[in-house]
Length: 328
Ligand code: AHM
Ligand code: MG
Image (tube, rainbow, N blue to C red; front, side, top):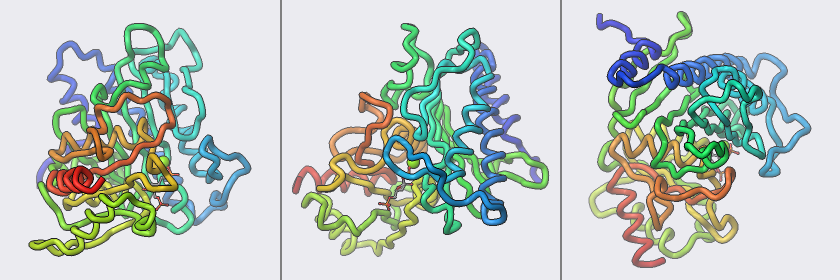
């Protein structure tokens, strides 16, 4: 039997490769993994206790929050705030950036996250996830600017999927690795080392009910996919970004949430949804674009801005760009 490698041990091994690393970053990752275990526990028993349903508050996008969103957000903030390694956080659930509560504990990193993405799926028991990204704090002391760096400046990104098992997937720019939670010992164990997305795949994931609102280039692309000369594609749409992305990362294919006449910038958020996923996919050999430029090159202007997201295997994303170029 091969030896089990825990997430903590893996992070420490990685850290040792960089003698200058002070361990700050290691602590942040471990704290996110800790919050993920607690969120996982609550998500798994969501059907058992009376935690489902909406609370009164609406988030900044006017959507009614589920209780588990609020809970997950609290867990992430509680895990990161006292580390002394973070200067500020940005979350889908909080309108403004969140500075650490004790200024004397400000650290060298800024963390962005969507604490529980796909939360509209909670009460139908569909896989959901936590997405995060970590930036180095900029020198100029402005924490908000640190949170608004282009995705290419990420030093780490990852997600946790609460599915049939709970998995933690992350990259620091040197390969993407996946860890599965063993609930009997409460540890994430290395289960998917060095993940590479296939160069092309046969899955396309898009909300096709928007078809008649798409620009011609997107309609033509989807028509092409359906009648591909050499390949039989299959459509998969869960409606939960982490779950749709995770499947396509492992199996190959493309996920699209493009712009349409109703949602001019698509639906997903650049800072804490698109950028971390784009950083992961590129490190796994794939691509992510908004249809015009690489996602990681976009300089965010605000914490909650939306962006069209086309992400996945190289072949499918490049084809998308060809169709947009040709048909608009
Ligand atoms: P959320 O951040 O409010 O949970 O919404 C984001 C979710 C993604 O997980 C998913 O890809 C998308 O919304 C699904 O959109 P649609 O409802 O159009 O299928
Ligand atoms: Mg979200």
